[in-house]
Length: 198
Length: 173
Image (cartoon, rainbow over all chains, first blue to last red; front, side, top):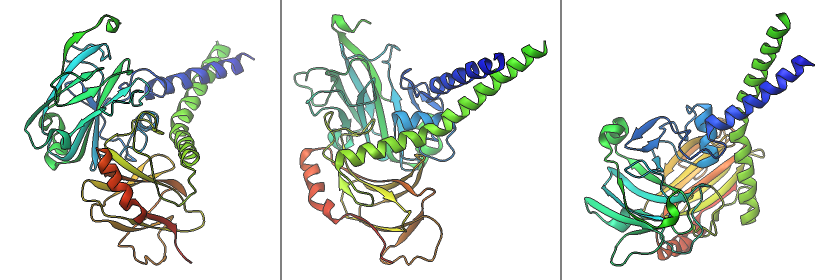
């Protein structure tokens, strides 16, 4: 009886540990991304490939199903601002960056369930086609469209959210020296309303 | 003392078995659920391409879709034989990617100029027909996904006008 109970308890702990370390349960979107961290933007270059360890494969299946391997696309995720505080729809942020050495790129906002937030603003990303061939670009992340801003990412109904940076067909220089070659976008908090303080 | 050691050994064995089994099984289970959900939502038979509705918060069926892409999807089944793919050209970014039943992206092809591809279960003497490339799937089932850059509604409408040229069909014996 005692040995059976030990086995059952061990199985339960093993299951919970697998769920925890792979990100299969909701522990924040980045727990399972431990490969590369560039100023808070995290990725794992094994995403999509057969060489990914079981934790990455399980995490990608849960939070990035049908992700491509690195030669076609690199996916970074970030859920904190430049001060290290969790991104939240109650605050306005300025997202700024420079052009990426790649065929195409985008930055998209996702809610805590890895889904697009439930709004009809048709403004959930900024991408290379929207900002054009400029070297420097910026966008405002806010629940309401700010006056006079050219680029806006809507955080309406997002609650706590994260951003995914997709870099498609990255240059060989970027792939071979990711941490040095990537100029990571910054996320500066501008203002907050009362409800974001959690 | 021996009883304690036995209990600890069983605890460790249970932990290891459950831990490894969960990690190994979860991608396949999640992929199977996703394929079923996609097939039901789109009323999609196996080995058929379907252009998904424009990605919006209301239409999303998988996690983290990009609203800048128009996705065409084919849930493939090679149990009855190989399939031939034809992908219509699209002037902006376009790729066709292959995912096996364990979520592994085993091939991706650039498709701005279109593509003709043979997908088989194993290296065989199946005639490539019009295909210019051939790939072997590690599993009988999986997903083929065409991504076409279409950030605006007008771009999506453009994809919709050419997507009828995509096909994902069993090879004729």
